[in-house]
Every structure is written in structure tokens, then in C-alpha cells.
Image 1 (cartoon, rainbow, N blue to C red):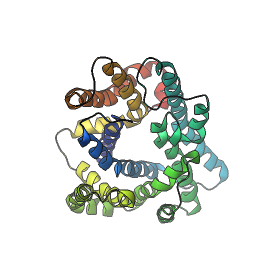
Image 2: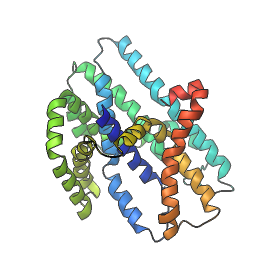
Image 3: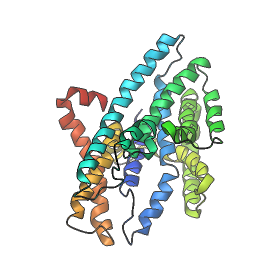
Length: 321
């Protein structure tokens, strides 16, 4: 499904865009702060929707606990070794580098290792939370799909109900509650794909106008983010269902999205630390130098590692595929 690959490419570019500045923004670049706030209103919801599409295209109800346990084990092996490995690399890298280079979200003690397991959103590798929560989604999705004998709508209903649950930091459950609805909507789209695709093709321009309007007037703040998030699904997916110049490149980036997600923040952080040794990133330096270089580093370095280094280390190639 080339449209899904293009959509994944667009989604991961938005993720990298948001990771260019992790903490204190560069002076004189309020445009980036405003743009990042707008992107954060919808980009992870759209990413979770696409993750739901990919999951439910393959997932099938299971009839016994052994089959369920096998499914959970496969998802764990698919996602969590990469999460723990790269979280550990981030922890060790920040610990070693923070005494002589700029480090965003520095390590404060050994308790940070426990946070990686129990409080992923508060850990030094918080940017990896999507993988952690996606594993929880896949376990819950497989269980509920089996209980409901393949019906997706109870999962959508659960996603709606979870919007009213106070956020819990433990085990990333706050993010689980916030985004499970969009993961389930991916399943609903799969169940009604022909009708869904037809309506997206008809309404995507209207949805795009609505999304831009919501962001322009600031309705995405507070609870209004839900409107922007819902509009982003037909708007961005509809855009990616079109054939356009650069679409093949976007699809390639989408196919590499897992590796980019794992490593983009580390690539950005390392590049930024080196660049800050030679120049300030305030003012025009950010626009002309830092922003384009950090975007390229966040996308290109993970791709180069995945294509030319990891294949020589079979286990690393497997867990990042």
C-alpha cells in the first residue's frame, strides 16, 4: 500500500521536525515554537492511526491462550529489544557526554534506568515512548480483537472512554489512554477500507482546510487538540493517496520509519552538540544552518546506519526492521 508508506514518511518527518528542538528554543525563532506546537496537536495521533492500520491489516483473532501468548511474544521481540537497546545507548551516551558537551535532558542518576522500564515518558529516552506504547496497544488490540471475535468497534468505544481517564505516568498509561482511540480508528479504517478510502478521496481537501483553520485560530490548544487530530487523518492520508513529485522518496522514508524513529533524536543531539562547539544556534543561524542540518541528520544518519552498517550485524538489523 504505497499511500500508507507515503503517509508513514510524512508522519516520521513531522516527528523529526518536532525533535529538532528538545528543550530551550533558539532565540529569535518563535516561528519554530509555534509550528512545533501546531504539529504536536496532531502528528502522533496520525502516526498511531497508521500504526493501527498496519497492525489490523495483519492481526487475526486467536482462539486460545497459547496462541495469544505466541502473538504477544512475537510483538515483544519485534519492538521491545530495540526500545531497551536504544534507551540504554541514550542513557550511557548522555552519562558520558554531559560533562563536556551540551546534552538535552541529562542523566541525573542510576534511577534513570528504572524510569526507562516503569516511567518511559519521564526517562532520559522519553522520545522512544511510541515504541513502548505501541507494544501495549498491540497486546491490548490482540486481546480485545480475540474477545470480540474480530469486531473493531468495541475497541473504538474503549478509545473514546479512555479520553475521560486521568493521565497516569506509570508504564506510559497516560499516552496509552490518549492515543488508543487513533490506533483503534486504524482498525476501523481497515474493516471499512473501500468506503473509508472513497470518503477520504472526496473530503481530504476540506479536511485539510479545516485542519489549517483549527491550527491557525489556536483551537488545537488544551482539549481542542482532538479536533486537529481527527481532521489530520483524512487530510494527511488523503494527500498521501495522491501521486506527486517526491512521493517515491517519501515512501522510502516511510519504509525506514522505524529506524528513523529509533535514532533520529540521537542523530540530532550528536549533530547539535558538535555544531554548538563552533556557532550559536540563535537568530538566523538556526534558520540557515542548524534547522536544515539537524533535519537532514535526523533522517539521513539513521537511514545510512540501517542500510550500510546494521546488515553487517544481523541481530541489530533484525530488531530495527
